[in-house]
Length: 213
Image (cartoon, rainbow, N blue to C red; front, side, top):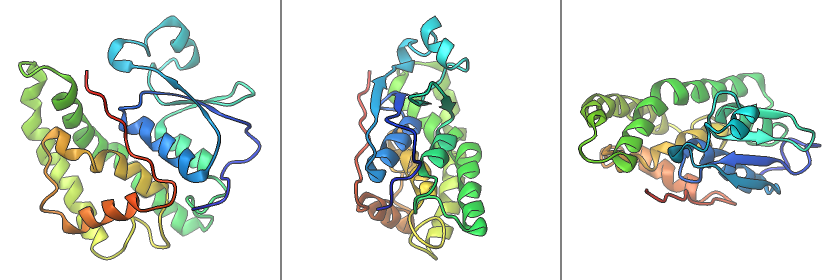
């Protein structure tokens, strides 16, 4: 798929929750770069990101967290993607194409993840009588708005950015392909579903691991 990506960082450690889309992004990228890494499972649904030991590593109390051999740490999934993909084909060197990748990474965190991922969380991890289920109609409406925008873009190209597969695709694939778990149906998005299939056909692809509580 690409060359080694970020170099000179040894074997990084990822603190992550396997069922999390944000953590899955990092694992998928590392697998597709062919990099060695250590994975430490941290279950945020059971409070494991709020322990004093974990908060000493990431005061924001979230996963994923990347830790390098020299002790440096980096949080926020899309920042981690950019760091690890530096120097590889998955993060363009061309300034305009790189800006387009960043555009989609910002979109994913602001206009996509808060709706697609949150609906998925409520349906998959909260009981049927939980009051947050009242949020689902609004979340699904906004999720469909984001997916419709992606559908229009993907009707004109194979991947999110001209020039091929990139970390923009990895970031958006993570929650998009699992949107039905949150009651967000993908049947009305043929270009989006074709893109999902193309992502899953890329070298080194590994699926998301989801174990519901």
